[in-house]
Every structure is written in structure tokens, then in C-alpha cells.
Image 1 (cartoon, rainbow, N blue to C red):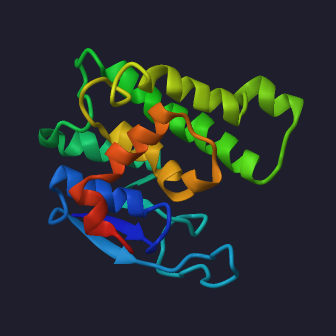
Image 2 (image 1 turned 180 degrees about the horizontal axis):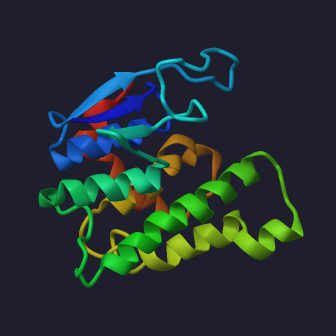
Length: 195
């Protein structure tokens, strides 16, 4: 059986939301663990097998998956019936993979660096910057409701998350604000509220 190591009100909450979207809550055991919190509370949980003590962490027998983009891909491939991923051979598979990787490798890092007040030419040369990332999203979302077009996908769930949490601290375009609102107006969001 699949096991998700999860800490409430953390980055792993998005994986819980994905499980609801996939109709897979009965197929994955959720183990709540503690993690160090920015306010100094919490701490590393010895029952959490993640080598860095972080969440989310997904196990499948002796195998494991870590990092949200990889977990999202694994779960949408494992539970394809909900249509939130794009299977091998789908004409949007490349775009789907690209958005997952872009979130993990570009958007999340530039957001964290921006919030931390870190700016350096090397960062801008390799990742670009927060404004460039927002411009990329706006270019897409000004022409379609979701990242892959007309239909909501796991890429939307993943990429919209930080905006739902911290959007009030950012200047967002109307297209991005509307997208975040659509992504948050879902039963899965309400099902995991506070978790």
C-alpha cells in the first residue's frame, strides 16, 4: 500500500488535496509526522523516513518518491482515471511534465528567494526572477483558464498553491488572481482545509 508522510498545514497538504481529486484517499495511508516549523515549533520526527526530515514523502512498498512535482507525477500516473495528469502518449504529456518541473525548478525557488530578499545576477541568469515567472503565468492564463487549456490538472493544483497561501502579499494580474480563485473553489480544497 502507498503511504504518504504528511505534516498538517505544510507543503504536503497539496498532496492530500491531490488524493481527494484523484479519488484515491482510500488507496493511500496517511501518516502524520512532525517537521521543524519556521516559528521554531515542531521538530524532526524519527518516524519520518524522508532523509532530510521533510514532507511530503511517499512510499510504495520498498520504493519511495519525494519532492512534490515527482509525487504529483507518480500519483497521476498511478491513478489516471481522474484525468488530472497526462499519460504517456497524450498530446499534452510534454506540457504537463514541463509545468510540473517548471513549478519545482523555477517558480517555487524564485518565490522563496524573492520573499527572502535574495537577489543575485547568477540567480536571474539561471532562474530569472519572480516578475518573469509571473509574466509567464499571465501570458498563458490570459488566453485560457488553466495551464493546459480548458481543463483543470494536477499542474494547476501544484502551481496555484503558493498564490492561495501568499497571494495577498503579492501583486497579481487579474488572469492569475482568477486562476487561483478557480483552483481554490474545489471540493478537494474544502476537504483538506486545516490539514
